[in-house]
Image (cartoon, rainbow, N blue to C red; front, side, top):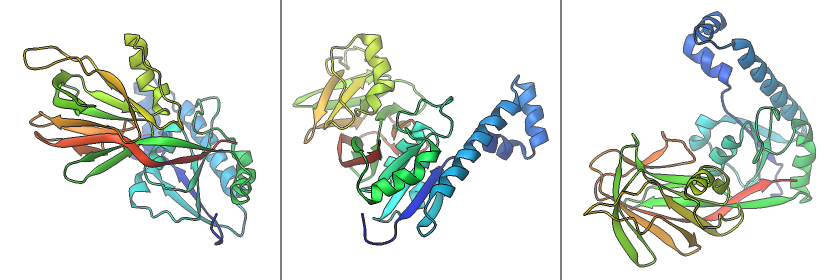
Length: 299
């Protein structure tokens, strides 16, 4: 850690109640709207209160002489992280994936505000452990796991990183048309798109695809320098093939895609469709292991 006083950056995302109130203005209007949908706003409020309690606990656990900052998921792309920062993500696993795109060597602690609600694969810790974890990071007495990431780069120099996977296809989920090349093999394809997954993502979307096709491919471990790519529902036609539908990429290897979509071609990471790279006709996209890794505190 830096010799400077650490700064704790607490990252959150709006709760369900926050989003409902933003849409309907008042609690009474939100309650009425949810009742018409057959939903009970009290359930949403209870989850919101559990989150607020956890957030208050995290904030109280930060040493008084340490610096601190608060940032929402929507502000991450504009927030400047410093080398001495310790990032504390309070929320679901997906929030850690969001954070991973914007940090470099900063350690990340995932706090699960509602263990009965969230699985906690990446947010492993209870709010009451925050102080112990923070001091463990500073004194290098904590268990740290480096999780590899995937990066996609366009020929125009745009770049997108993801912790779980990158999806390439049509934004409206129509048939995607592209040329694919890997390890000296190439063909044109028509498919439902493809994903390139890390070891972290191999337990999610990639796992579902592998289970459906019974594919004989070993998913990577989170810290392993290997990716897997999986083409979804490739269609054989006179102009398209199905011979390159899955495989692995190690450090130094890449998957190259050339868009044949007149419009609507995109690449996005970790399910965030709004944060995407446009892939107009002729745009080349290169996907590979990202340099560095997410430094996740696991114990």
